[in-house]
Image (cartoon, rainbow, N blue to C red; front, side):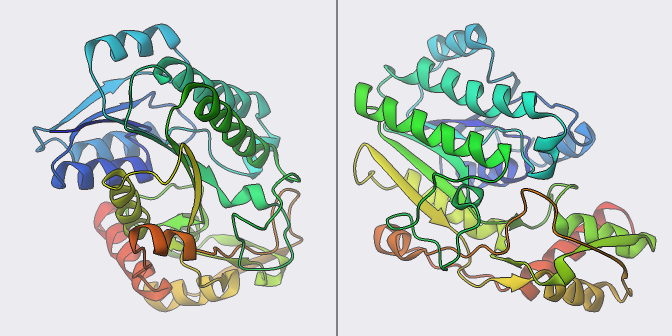
Amino acid sequence: MSKVLVTGAAGFIGAHLSKQLCLAGFQVIGIDNLNTYYTPQLKKDRLSTLENFDSFKFIEMDITDEVALQELAKEQVFDYVIHLAAQPGVRYSFEDPHSYIQNNYVGTFTLLNVFKDKNLKHFLMASSSSVYGNALDAPFAVATHNTDHPISLYAATKKGTESLAHTYAHCFGLPITALRFFTVYGPWGRPDMAVYKFTDKLYKGETIDYYGDGKPLRDYTYVDDIVTAIVKLTQTAPQSNYNIFNIGNNTPETVATLINTLEELTSQKAKLNPLPLPPGDVDKTCADVDPLKQHIGFHPATSLKKGLSQFVNWYKQYYNL
């Protein structure tokens, strides 16, 4: 049985991924520091969904703690590392920039340094569509789009981790794949993200800040599609020592469409507070996923309305509405 280390296992994508890896026959060690960026109770509740899997073990650990990681790497022989732990959020990076440097850049460096000589079959790591900055032409393609001009500190740290990864792949022969996620949403999502935040405000009758007249486009990608792609990548030999793939839905929708659809699904009317687009926010995102289709047969399967319906159903159940 192959053994996988999942960082950020109590996180939104990490918990979903850990479950699917267990179902696919992997032994999973999940680590997370359970920080207070948003309520740790949600993270603990996610972990509770994994309690029935004998093949899953959780260890509370910070990825910047190199001594603890070295001890873990001595105790366990991993075939794969899937690195999802990070300080997320574009806007919060203007409030607490130090946490982004520490958790994203230093944390990724620490993991790469610990596992550079552990004979991993594959080191997969989360990047972000934010690295494309305010690119004008869509869809965004790994091969042709410049990522040298991030417009938020969050994006800069994600671009920095890609550069670190390339160095470790080149110098140590560590097979690495960086995954640029595009606006992931779904059950157990993060409260700071639009889908969760808007749904919460709709049910509570609170005002939604409505940026850029609802015109910004986002390539909303359902979490199951993300997780399916990662599991397939784990089961597929990497193309080379260093690879980058987009994982998105390839069907951008406006924020206005997102709110209108949530209004329909919740039977609530939104109260909107029009505001200009904040610094760091991009006008649009759209993923070119053709390389991923060619490599693993990836096809995003979830429409926005279907995915939002799944999220709203989860939200109502979680909050006993």
